[in-house]
Image (cartoon, rainbow, N blue to C red):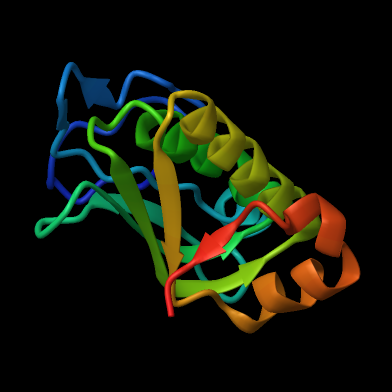
Length: 148
């Protein structure tokens, strides 16, 4: 399965971790296509998860759905996020329609990585699904910081 590409920069292979070049995000957009729709040519279209750098502060904007199909992209994006310099790193989830429990666990792990570096990861605009997972697993998710 090849990622979709619209000419807006180089797109690394799915699961690639090398999206970050020293201190600056590459101008790449990571995409993960819906496997069934892509493989059969049928389906409701392409589901994407994209990760783009925030222009106004250190961090990223996620758009799409974070589930089994897009897990490699989420992993790559969070790997980049944990290497962005700054005392506070921001993750804007306003474009995320859904986060499954494994995606929330990946956020908790990314938060632990950033916290271990003496920094903070702040989540913005969490979707309903994140709030529901936090309600189900309050102890595991207690370290997540959500902006007011």
